[in-house]
Length: 165
Image (tube, rainbow, N blue to C red; front, side, top):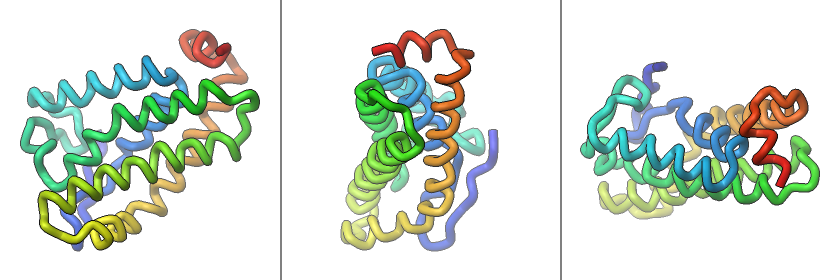
């Protein structure tokens, strides 16, 4: 587990966790991706320290950053759903899907929760996400590249079944 990187002006750290969410949706598809990440969130909720830095528990989900985590199952579903409907797995298509499902959707849900828990106006809480953008852009590109490579090599049996549709 890599430690979270704190940001001075927002109580939500930089982590690699959204990379896992995007990759899960892209590789496992909508249903399996959703259920996998939902299980992760449930395990976090009961206190298993699965988050970056060994964090877990309901307190993490009710904290200002909880909306990001709670959005993960739906983000994985969205990414998987769009990925399943692709006829051509190009970098451009997969980057677009991961930007929409893995960045914009998670930012939207996280910002809404952040705004609610901190009384910060929504526009300001959404703008605070700019701190995550450089790292998330790298994660999006890596997710797209890995999805294409794993699909081409056929090294993940469940991936082959999911990508056939």
